[in-house]
Length: 484
Ligand SMILES: [Zn+2]
Image (cartoon, rainbow, N blue to C red; front, side):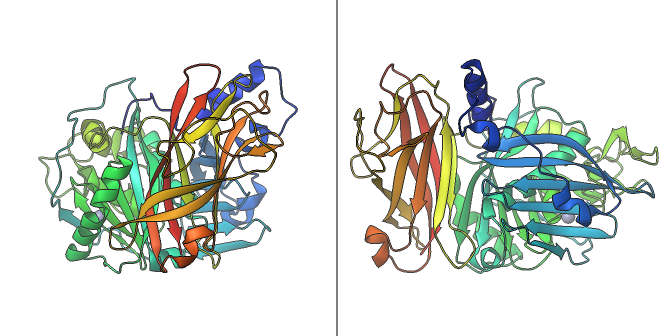
């Protein structure tokens, strides 16, 4: 959850400001990777055809550039576009145009694949009474000016993960952005969804009453580990299923528009109004169907906004999901306090090679001597050293959970990078004057990993960035999901 105290989403901007203030723009820096530069329109131009894209947000989250906005077609219809560019340049995009909705993936070589969402009736009953809800820490409405984050644990079944065909972190970010766009469009300020972790589990729980409960139970220890609020699960198939007034949804991989609808059930919404005494419903005004009532236009119902035809997108008495979000948002974001510090994700690719790589910008001033250490000797070095020879590496031994939920050791290779200085992570005094990065790699055959049984391993690796010039410290939380 939580108020805007975290560096998670803002670190790169703070960092960039520091860089500009120092007058140093001639290095490899944030300028390519971390300033919010929208993805070139040519990447999705063919896919959206003659529709006009009106971008309403662009941000960088963990090295991924996330943008979204509405699409306006020539015949006056409204759709939406979400574009996520991975650090390696690949693009994952969710297109929702009348008559054309689905997932566009453009790989690093520029090869483009569009997978259409199969027809699905979003009025299919898909909402269950919440089970086993743990009480949230915070109740009541969100407060103006105090931004609340709903921290999301995104989990894939191994079957869905294997067929995802794109970067699992990018896909998760794109999914959350479909809901965030609806919140913005419907004028729900001060509330958004944020990615806390991506995990993969080799289980086959289905889209049934028993299946969603099994998923919620399975995710329970991980949700505590990552201190996240709400679970979004992806399995093979289409459509979705969600608890109403609960914190779990199960979504079909082939329905990229399902999640924005299912999270609307989580916050307390139902489909089209069948009870004039309540307003927690979606809206169909004859032209436009909001997320909960048909899932055609990128809005949660609200009487405060009109569609492209000039018709209101809700009714104060019978269809006001924006109000439901404002009233219940603090509850949904308030299950667990967010982990303090920086956040990073390391996830094996869904391709044949299970290798994983991630990099993190650490927001220290360019002049500061700083390093990264482990919190326990069993994980890695816990104290800083001033220098070492170039291209040395640190082995980190993290305790992750195997398929049975038991702790096992998984090993990683990590380096601290400042410009051309690539060293062990705990080196503090080399190459100050350049941005500080942590790089982590997972190799299935490295060290003791070679003897790990096949399967998925999920968990949290905690490190800490420290200055050797001052008392400055910053926790680093690495959500890990790797495959052997
Ligand atoms: Zn539904």
